[in-house]
Length: 217
Image (cartoon, rainbow, N blue to C red; front, top):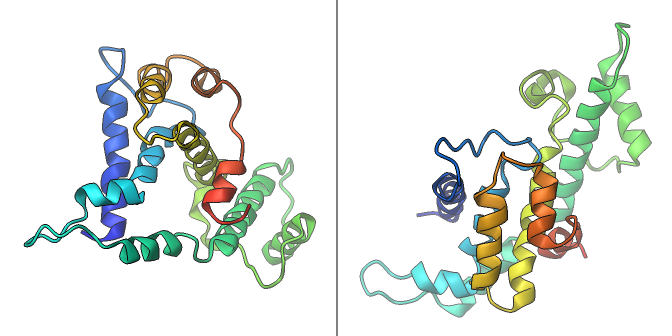
């Protein structure tokens, strides 16, 4: 399996656990605000490439030899590649989406000029373009209208939630895992999502863990 396939496996496992641990007869883990729907899945991706976890499953299919430390370090380092560019690129697209959705009139507009004004307002460097141009940005006219930001917000949530395990010094801390199960997985969609998150974390999410994970702290 490729690294991307492993990440996908852990990701989908998170969705499965969301349904499996639900307190309800007819669970609807996806029936939560878009801001939170990917938290149960994306948090699982954090374990996929942790050195401690990699050594549990990344073994030679014939000899059983465990993945060497130097290769693990290369995988860890690769996760930092181009993260500054990618983060700003996502944010620029999110602002563009929001500005289109906030229009309150039906006036015709020059699309290119509209985009330039958005990027100028947020101080986007000319060397970095948005992930999409408006004319091929299908999200803004589809199910993600005014919601493209949810991709990077989900990353904030999963990084901050995973940090709860890091702070314990144990990626498999049982008390933290039970809290995540009881407040996030079991109750998903039944209460206000931020209220549930604060019950798990004891506070609102912070961006610090995501910045650290991306090497931007």
